[in-house]
Length: 273
Image 1 (cartoon, helix red, strand yellow):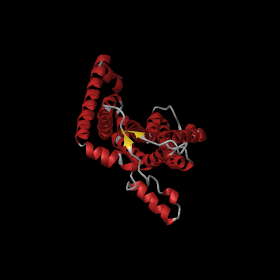
Image 2 (cartoon, rainbow, N blue to C red; image 1 turned 90 degrees about the vertical axis):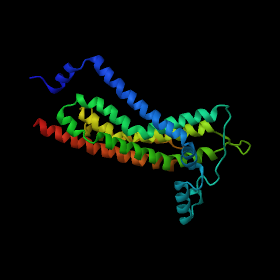
Image 3 (tube, one colour; image 1 turned 60 degrees about the horizontal axis):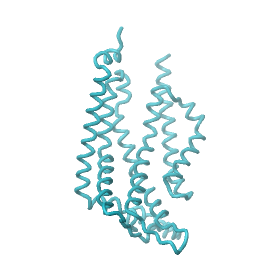
Image 4 (cartoon, rainbow, N blue to C red; image 1 turned 135 degrees about the horizontal axis):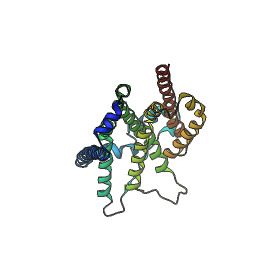
Protein backbone atom coordinates (compact mmCIF):
# COMPACT_ATOMS: atom_id res chain seq x y z
CA UNK A 1 0.00 0.00 0.00
CA UNK A 2 1.33 3.42 -0.94
CA UNK A 3 2.41 5.54 1.99
CA UNK A 4 1.28 9.11 2.67
CA UNK A 5 4.70 10.56 1.89
CA UNK A 6 5.01 8.62 -1.38
CA UNK A 7 1.70 9.98 -2.63
CA UNK A 8 2.82 13.52 -1.83
CA UNK A 9 6.10 12.96 -3.70
CA UNK A 10 4.15 11.71 -6.74
CA UNK A 11 1.89 14.74 -6.73
CA UNK A 12 4.82 17.19 -6.70
CA UNK A 13 8.09 16.90 -8.56
CA UNK A 14 11.46 18.39 -7.65
CA UNK A 15 10.91 21.59 -9.65
CA UNK A 16 7.46 21.97 -8.11
CA UNK A 17 9.03 21.80 -4.65
CA UNK A 18 11.57 24.45 -5.64
CA UNK A 19 8.77 26.70 -6.90
CA UNK A 20 6.85 26.30 -3.63
CA UNK A 21 10.02 27.00 -1.62
CA UNK A 22 10.72 30.08 -3.75
CA UNK A 23 7.35 31.58 -2.88
CA UNK A 24 7.81 30.83 0.83
CA UNK A 25 11.17 32.64 0.69
CA UNK A 26 9.68 35.55 -1.29
CA UNK A 27 6.88 36.04 1.26
CA UNK A 28 9.40 35.87 4.10
CA UNK A 29 11.60 38.44 2.37
CA UNK A 30 8.62 40.74 1.80
CA UNK A 31 7.71 40.52 5.50
CA UNK A 32 11.28 41.47 6.48
CA UNK A 33 11.31 44.41 4.03
CA UNK A 34 7.91 45.74 5.18
CA UNK A 35 8.96 45.62 8.84
CA UNK A 36 12.39 47.03 7.98
CA UNK A 37 10.71 50.01 6.28
CA UNK A 38 8.67 50.63 9.45
CA UNK A 39 11.86 50.39 11.54
CA UNK A 40 13.56 52.80 9.12
CA UNK A 41 10.72 55.32 9.55
CA UNK A 42 10.68 55.07 13.35
CA UNK A 43 14.46 55.35 13.62
CA UNK A 44 14.21 57.65 16.65
CA UNK A 45 12.68 54.89 18.76
CA UNK A 46 14.93 52.17 17.29
CA UNK A 47 18.18 54.03 17.93
CA UNK A 48 17.55 56.26 20.96
CA UNK A 49 15.26 53.96 22.94
CA UNK A 50 16.60 50.54 21.91
CA UNK A 51 20.07 50.50 20.33
CA UNK A 52 21.82 53.29 22.25
CA UNK A 53 20.03 52.74 25.59
CA UNK A 54 22.33 50.00 27.04
CA UNK A 55 25.26 52.46 27.32
CA UNK A 56 23.22 54.79 29.53
CA UNK A 57 23.24 54.54 33.36
CA UNK A 58 19.42 54.87 33.20
CA UNK A 59 19.08 51.60 31.26
CA UNK A 60 17.02 49.06 33.23
CA UNK A 61 19.83 46.50 33.75
CA UNK A 62 22.43 49.14 34.62
CA UNK A 63 20.07 50.78 37.11
CA UNK A 64 19.08 47.49 38.78
CA UNK A 65 22.69 46.29 39.07
CA UNK A 66 23.76 49.62 40.55
CA UNK A 67 20.95 49.56 43.11
CA UNK A 68 21.86 46.00 44.05
CA UNK A 69 25.54 46.98 44.26
CA UNK A 70 24.69 49.85 46.61
CA UNK A 71 22.67 47.48 48.80
CA UNK A 72 25.59 45.06 49.23
CA UNK A 73 28.21 47.81 49.09
CA UNK A 74 29.88 46.66 45.85
CA UNK A 75 30.31 49.80 43.76
CA UNK A 76 31.78 47.93 40.78
CA UNK A 77 28.29 46.67 39.93
CA UNK A 78 27.39 50.19 38.81
CA UNK A 79 28.16 49.57 35.14
CA UNK A 80 27.95 52.11 32.30
CA UNK A 81 27.88 54.94 34.84
CA UNK A 82 29.92 57.09 32.43
CA UNK A 83 28.34 56.71 28.98
CA UNK A 84 30.84 57.11 26.15
CA UNK A 85 30.35 59.14 22.98
CA UNK A 86 29.82 57.28 19.72
CA UNK A 87 31.37 58.76 16.61
CA UNK A 88 30.88 58.30 12.88
CA UNK A 89 33.94 58.53 10.61
CA UNK A 90 32.42 57.64 7.24
CA UNK A 91 30.40 59.93 4.95
CA UNK A 92 27.65 57.34 4.44
CA UNK A 93 28.24 55.64 7.78
CA UNK A 94 25.04 56.73 9.52
CA UNK A 95 22.87 56.05 6.47
CA UNK A 96 24.29 52.53 5.88
CA UNK A 97 24.01 51.78 9.60
CA UNK A 98 20.40 52.99 9.53
CA UNK A 99 19.61 50.53 6.72
CA UNK A 100 21.46 47.63 8.35
CA UNK A 101 19.75 48.13 11.73
CA UNK A 102 16.35 48.39 10.03
CA UNK A 103 16.92 45.06 8.25
CA UNK A 104 18.01 43.36 11.49
CA UNK A 105 14.96 44.77 13.30
CA UNK A 106 12.75 43.58 10.45
CA UNK A 107 14.20 40.07 10.68
CA UNK A 108 13.81 39.87 14.47
CA UNK A 109 10.18 41.02 14.44
CA UNK A 110 9.33 38.88 11.41
CA UNK A 111 10.95 35.73 12.86
CA UNK A 112 7.65 34.01 13.83
CA UNK A 113 6.29 34.57 10.32
CA UNK A 114 9.54 33.41 8.66
CA UNK A 115 9.55 30.24 10.76
CA UNK A 116 5.87 29.68 9.95
CA UNK A 117 6.63 29.96 6.21
CA UNK A 118 9.48 27.44 6.50
CA UNK A 119 7.29 25.16 8.60
CA UNK A 120 4.51 25.40 6.00
CA UNK A 121 6.99 24.15 3.40
CA UNK A 122 8.19 21.21 5.53
CA UNK A 123 4.81 20.24 7.02
CA UNK A 124 3.26 18.52 3.93
CA UNK A 125 6.16 16.02 3.88
CA UNK A 126 5.38 14.81 7.41
CA UNK A 127 3.13 11.96 8.43
CA UNK A 128 -0.11 12.80 10.24
CA UNK A 129 1.27 11.62 13.60
CA UNK A 130 4.47 13.65 13.06
CA UNK A 131 2.38 16.76 12.37
CA UNK A 132 0.47 16.16 15.58
CA UNK A 133 3.66 15.69 17.62
CA UNK A 134 5.29 18.82 16.16
CA UNK A 135 2.18 20.91 16.82
CA UNK A 136 3.14 24.23 18.36
CA UNK A 137 6.63 24.23 16.80
CA UNK A 138 6.19 27.77 15.45
CA UNK A 139 4.98 29.11 18.79
CA UNK A 140 7.69 27.52 20.93
CA UNK A 141 10.48 28.33 18.45
CA UNK A 142 9.39 31.96 18.33
CA UNK A 143 9.03 32.10 22.11
CA UNK A 144 12.54 30.73 22.69
CA UNK A 145 13.99 33.06 20.05
CA UNK A 146 12.46 36.15 21.66
CA UNK A 147 13.51 35.03 25.15
CA UNK A 148 17.05 34.63 23.80
CA UNK A 149 16.93 38.08 22.15
CA UNK A 150 15.71 39.69 25.39
CA UNK A 151 18.34 37.82 27.40
CA UNK A 152 21.06 39.02 25.05
CA UNK A 153 19.76 42.59 25.06
CA UNK A 154 19.18 43.01 28.80
CA UNK A 155 22.00 40.84 30.18
CA UNK A 156 24.86 40.31 27.73
CA UNK A 157 24.76 43.65 25.89
CA UNK A 158 25.09 45.97 28.96
CA UNK A 159 27.97 43.86 30.31
CA UNK A 160 29.70 43.81 26.92
CA UNK A 161 29.20 47.54 26.37
CA UNK A 162 30.56 48.35 29.84
CA UNK A 163 33.61 46.12 29.57
CA UNK A 164 34.59 46.88 25.98
CA UNK A 165 33.67 50.56 26.18
CA UNK A 166 35.67 51.24 29.34
CA UNK A 167 38.62 48.90 28.75
CA UNK A 168 41.92 50.61 27.99
CA UNK A 169 45.53 49.49 27.71
CA UNK A 170 46.91 52.89 28.67
CA UNK A 171 45.70 56.26 29.99
CA UNK A 172 47.24 57.78 26.87
CA UNK A 173 44.75 55.93 24.64
CA UNK A 174 41.28 57.42 24.40
CA UNK A 175 38.31 55.24 23.46
CA UNK A 176 36.30 56.75 20.62
CA UNK A 177 33.78 54.09 19.68
CA UNK A 178 32.80 53.96 16.04
CA UNK A 179 29.07 53.73 15.27
CA UNK A 180 29.47 50.69 13.01
CA UNK A 181 31.55 48.84 15.63
CA UNK A 182 29.00 49.54 18.37
CA UNK A 183 26.02 48.49 16.24
CA UNK A 184 27.70 45.27 15.01
CA UNK A 185 28.50 44.29 18.61
CA UNK A 186 24.90 44.84 19.73
CA UNK A 187 23.28 43.05 16.78
CA UNK A 188 25.67 40.07 16.79
CA UNK A 189 25.18 39.48 20.52
CA UNK A 190 21.38 39.76 20.32
CA UNK A 191 21.02 37.52 17.25
CA UNK A 192 23.51 34.95 18.60
CA UNK A 193 21.54 34.77 21.86
CA UNK A 194 18.25 34.29 20.01
CA UNK A 195 19.69 31.48 17.88
CA UNK A 196 21.41 29.75 20.81
CA UNK A 197 18.12 29.65 22.73
CA UNK A 198 16.70 27.44 19.95
CA UNK A 199 18.75 24.54 21.41
CA UNK A 200 15.72 22.60 22.81
CA UNK A 201 13.99 22.82 19.40
CA UNK A 202 17.11 21.51 17.65
CA UNK A 203 17.38 18.64 20.14
CA UNK A 204 13.68 17.87 19.64
CA UNK A 205 13.95 17.45 15.87
CA UNK A 206 17.27 15.58 16.06
CA UNK A 207 15.69 13.20 18.57
CA UNK A 208 12.67 12.71 16.31
CA UNK A 209 15.02 11.93 13.43
CA UNK A 210 16.81 9.35 15.58
CA UNK A 211 20.15 11.15 15.28
CA UNK A 212 20.54 11.62 19.03
CA UNK A 213 19.22 9.86 22.14
CA UNK A 214 19.05 10.91 25.80
CA UNK A 215 21.94 8.54 26.53
CA UNK A 216 24.13 10.32 23.97
CA UNK A 217 23.23 13.70 25.47
CA UNK A 218 24.05 12.46 28.97
CA UNK A 219 27.32 10.86 27.84
CA UNK A 220 28.51 14.08 26.21
CA UNK A 221 27.18 16.38 28.95
CA UNK A 222 30.70 17.35 30.08
CA UNK A 223 31.80 17.99 26.51
CA UNK A 224 28.72 20.14 25.99
CA UNK A 225 29.55 22.13 29.12
CA UNK A 226 32.97 22.95 27.68
CA UNK A 227 31.35 24.04 24.39
CA UNK A 228 28.81 26.17 26.27
CA UNK A 229 31.58 27.87 28.25
CA UNK A 230 33.50 28.48 25.01
CA UNK A 231 30.41 30.03 23.40
CA UNK A 232 29.87 32.17 26.50
CA UNK A 233 33.47 33.36 26.30
CA UNK A 234 32.99 34.33 22.63
CA UNK A 235 29.79 36.35 23.00
CA UNK A 236 30.60 38.01 26.35
CA UNK A 237 33.39 40.14 27.79
CA UNK A 238 36.35 38.08 29.07
CA UNK A 239 35.36 38.03 32.73
CA UNK A 240 34.15 35.07 34.76
CA UNK A 241 30.96 36.73 36.03
CA UNK A 242 29.63 37.45 32.52
CA UNK A 243 30.54 33.99 31.23
CA UNK A 244 28.75 32.25 34.10
CA UNK A 245 25.73 34.53 33.67
CA UNK A 246 25.45 33.51 30.01
CA UNK A 247 26.43 29.85 30.47
CA UNK A 248 23.83 29.19 33.18
CA UNK A 249 20.69 29.46 30.96
CA UNK A 250 22.46 27.47 28.22
CA UNK A 251 23.15 24.65 30.68
CA UNK A 252 19.49 24.76 31.76
CA UNK A 253 18.38 24.62 28.10
CA UNK A 254 20.66 21.61 27.54
CA UNK A 255 19.11 19.82 30.52
CA UNK A 256 15.64 20.66 29.19
CA UNK A 257 16.77 19.19 25.87
CA UNK A 258 17.72 15.93 27.63
CA UNK A 259 14.23 15.74 29.17
CA UNK A 260 12.64 16.37 25.76
CA UNK A 261 14.82 13.72 24.11
CA UNK A 262 14.03 11.23 26.89
CA UNK A 263 10.31 11.77 26.42
CA UNK A 264 10.51 11.31 22.64
CA UNK A 265 12.70 8.22 23.00
CA UNK A 266 10.27 6.66 25.49
CA UNK A 267 7.33 7.28 23.12
CA UNK A 268 9.20 5.78 20.17
CA UNK A 269 10.14 2.72 22.20
CA UNK A 270 6.53 2.20 23.34
CA UNK A 271 5.37 2.35 19.69
CA UNK A 272 7.96 -0.27 18.67
CA UNK A 273 6.85 -2.57 21.49
